[in-house]
Image 1 (cartoon, rainbow, N blue to C red):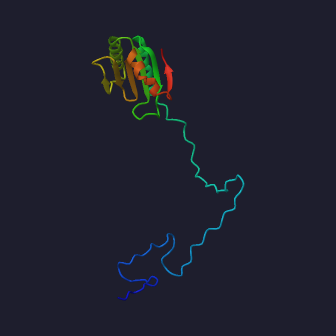
Image 2: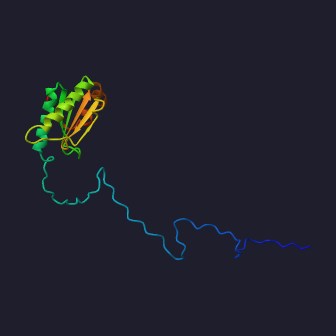
Length: 184
């Protein structure tokens, strides 16, 4: 029996023939030259390349902060004084204009008992309804328990706390960057 001797490898065009993958980064077309490299940049010792500065449009000077609201400031001081009259402890008026959207001033005070907190809240509400220009609270919260009472007058919000509640929540710490005026 005669055997055929295999000589070298032949390329076959059968569909089962395996093709080696093309090298990465090279095109499939024949005769294309490799892409030209960008010229090397000249290195400078310790200097960053100079860049052109873009000219920004000139913006007119703006005011340092929001406008003063004399009616709201007067209301905040009146509420603060009414709280001092009922022996409120550490009455503070916080100026939060530009820092919050819901009010301009926050008045904070505390008392030793829930009855005193409720008495201060009642005094503020009754006294602000008197006079030529009566002012009524938009909303009140906490009158049931007397631990933390909130009186909302729109541009002024008053927070009346029990002493331990005030120290626990550290309300003034939330507004540490607000200007403050201590009334008592």
